[in-house]
Length: 284
Ligand code: G3H
Ligand code: ZN
Image 1 (cartoon, rainbow, N blue to C red):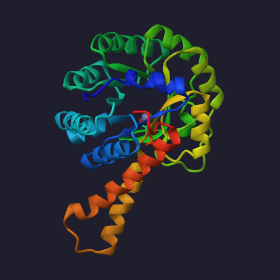
Image 2: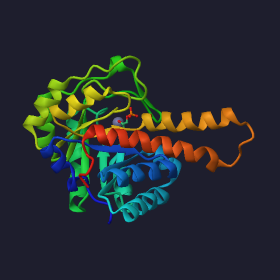
Image 3: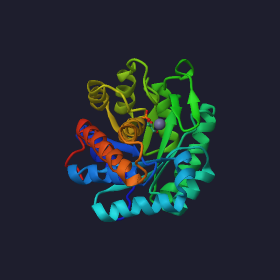
Image 4: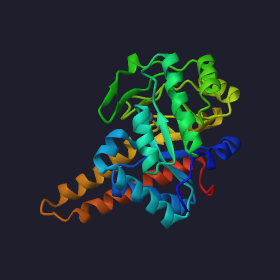
């Protein structure tokens, strides 16, 4: 099966009150672990690729890995640019074979965010590529981008409605209190904002910073209307812990397969547990 746009599965997720996971791909082992979890649980999924990961893997390798995953698994898989920063990056990804892009214009003014997102939607839609926008700012750290939790700002429902109406995005990330990276304490999620926005617009509501969010909060977010949930850090933490364990046990290990295999297995377990929490099992 070729890579598909998020519109192949997000409307059904919204309708069926479950969420499809975006799992960030950072290297071959991430791609394999996420795919294996999807195959075992017959779940659709999204490979999220940040600009930092794109730089690390190279665009050709990134697309080749995702295409191999789609071909091998037969699953509906979207290859999605995560937190894209410009029209140029989005177009470069689409040209290379991405089936979906996010434009994160949340650091621009509201009006500029609308204008810039709209341009991307127009071009991406002409090529059958889905688009995610972002409103409000999400705290924490991802790649080299950090934002203090106190400086993060929640999305305003009335702005989210206008943003959707003017841009026509397929999915909308709204800042509701989650953060990127490892949480210190529990997040305070504003489920009422998710509910209000989901009830007012047909686009899929996206929850970023899905790592470390307690299961009951994930369920509550889905019940409120979140149809896409992003997870990156939890896979990084689990994979690295497995590598550390192998290396700490035996300082003579030098074959990468000896520590990358347990890392990959640990990530399969993380992704399977998220797919189960999200309710996407058997939906492929
Ligand atoms: O865009 C990606 C994410 O929002 C992932 O966040 O690393 O906290 O899971 P996370
Ligand atoms: Zn994010």
